[in-house]
Amino acid sequence: MAELVVLGFSDKEKAEGVLRLSKELSRQELLDLEDAALAWRTMDGKIHVRQTYSPTATGAAGGALWGSLFGLLFLMPVFGAAVGAATGAVAGKLTDVGINDSFVKEIAHALEPGHAAVFALVRRSTPDRVRDAVRPFHPTVLRTSLTKDREEELVEALRPS
Image (cartoon, rainbow, N blue to C red; front, side):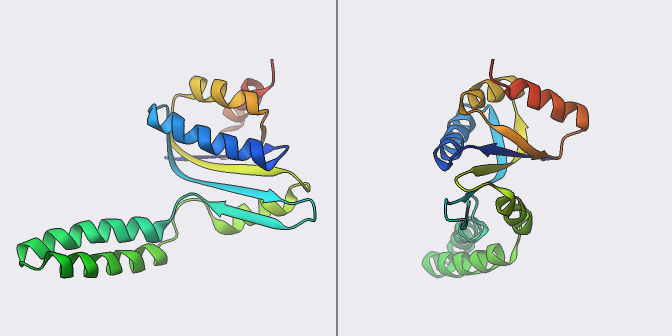
C-alpha cells in the first residue's frame, strides 16, 4: 500500500529541488513513487499546482503499444497503434489515480505566500537514504498517511542536525 507524505518548503525552488531529487532517487532504486505533485502560493496569494503524473499520456503510450501488437496480428500496425493510442488516452483521461486533486488544492490554500509543498505517494522506499537526501532542503512534514509513531519518527529524522 502506498503512503502519502506532504512536505512543506519555504520556497518553490526548494520544492522543485526535491522533485528533481526524487527522480534521481528513483533511478537509484531508492524511491518508487506512484504519484507526485507540487503546489505553491505566489507572493500575491495565487495558488499553482503541477502534477507530475499524467494518466492521459500514460494511457496513450500503453494503448499505442497494445494497439501496435494487435495491429501486427491483423497486418495493420499503424492503424492499430493509432486506435490504441486514442483509446488509451481516453481511458487515461477518465481515470483519476494517485493523489486527490481537491486534497492538493486544500493544502495549497493553507500555504503562506511564497511557500510550497511537495506531495508524494510512495510505493516503496529506502527510508534512511531518502530522508538523508531530503534533509538539506529543510522540509516540514505537513501531512502523512503514516501511523502516528512513524510520522513522529519522520519529523524527527528530517530535523536539521
